[in-house]
Image (cartoon, rainbow, N blue to C red; front, side, top):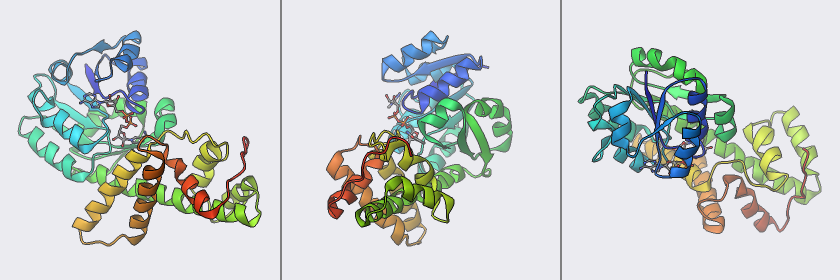
Length: 298
Ligand code: NAD
């Protein structure tokens, strides 16, 4: 079965690479030609448009930056909806439930089944094939593409309703970025009081403060001051905004989430869209008048 892959960025390229290496015949497209060139070296066919992918492949994956771009690629002029061959569309992006539902509704009218399947685990997980995948949509289609999803990570089926996987992803990311924000606050306070950052992480990880920031993000990207975890402030802000907008539409206040959103806004205002979101701690350091010492092995 021919597979299409659109969007070969930080996440898409390693996921498509794993599919190509597993032997799936792949047709790829990205506005950035260099990424498609690298896939071509592995045997993938390069398409020149979204339409060409959807005319060639029965199953089309997308991994794109924003809901607006996903909607345009799926439903816009020359989009997936007009494809002659495509039967199953799988959105690996963080798109939010509203656009996922809209796209699923429009695609099924053209006999194309939509699965939302956002991922968690970052660029490292995408390379290793250890991502968590949150899938929703018709279960028969999920079963059909399960061997492909297994190449990318562990797929957990969240239900048949369009957008459920997306809701799960937004919730996951809100928890993750909130852990980063509060752990960053704690590290700055502890260091200003005289604690060594590596000692703090040892204690937090042995105790009840353990979370994905203390285990992974802080030792890997903050203590060595490389700020290269691989997730931009703009993307994290997008995820947080999508989650809070959804909660607001449901009438659910999320005061903690809103505070974290402002932390991301301040990080973006100070360091820019493309700054890694682990830079958030630098904003807190400025307020505290202290900087964590560089620790290369935590
Ligand atoms: P990215 O910006 O690195 O990659 C997006 C790719 O899409 C780029 O190569 C870009 O050229 C391409 N693109 C944009 N518009 C296009 C179009 N119209 N047609 C074809 N290609 C187009 O983004 P990313 O970090 O790989 O993230 C992709 C998605 O995965 C996002 O929705 C993000 O929220 C989500 N995500 C990212 C991470 C992460 O750690 N980076 C983790 C989990 C989920």
